[in-house]
Image (cartoon, helix red, strand yellow):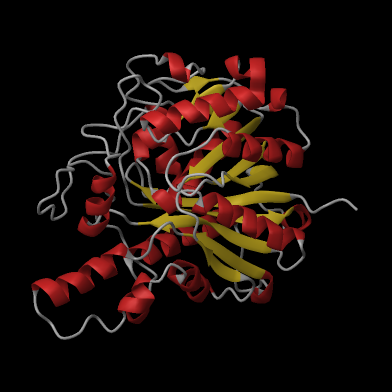
Length: 402
């Protein structure tokens, strides 16, 4: 029995390089960097670079609901609203029981947690904000998206560190293929631009000092950033029946676990996930034109990812366009995969590969065809998005032009 085809009919996003999917893509094409000096209260942080979004319009969110929402939920709701509008779906006539949402989160509502600690330990208050728990819990963005748009189908959160977006998208695809829904909103959100989060990441000694330079020999670490991204996914039959704008088809999904170290990546895990994705898509390695790499700009990650790509693609690795858009929007943790899906879908639609900016010096251990500093026009029929997270949790998605 043939399985359900799944297509993308809408995209929405917010991050340091844009507050909607189109502006994010335009910034990617222009090689614009959204990473800069922090404006938040840094206290004793040594880190002074990140990807902040700044003030955003929250029109359409009921003030009574807004007080129950952490910032990561607000971003998810706004990204979902944009994606729904782009899809042309009329929620007034759609069956809400056939529409669901899966939103990935790597951490939690960091602003609510930081505020609670500040209230109790610095200001000596007797209690926290009454909505601290619903503002902080990792499943809150999925629930808030459901309530904002009246979605009554499968709704849940996913958390798998930096692979959360891709795992959320894969989980949503499963709901469609199993017939539990006709439409799923899927993506991720995170807001790590908070003192507490930056402090603990600083302790890991993986944060860059000045900029994010994936695959460049002089790279020295990742840059954290706020962000959210959501895609509207539909079965092919449902999308074509309502004449929806089909942006791309998700043709393959692959997952694996390293079962090794909690923070150090392996080659075997990413290889297994990419190969599983190709197998699911029923495509040879030579069919892939572009890889949006996980590309965090840490020494180990970029070297291991290079080895994994070469293991899967062999000689074709020399023909693949590879880039890491994290060099522009930063590492948005649970939102990264969803923002990078915007890059993959638009690379297919427009025949443009976004660049890895900040690339200065080739690294012999990262000897891929890196699209460096300037976007490149080239045909892209199939693109894959890699996500390889702490804990060895790997998720890869392949999208194809329709």
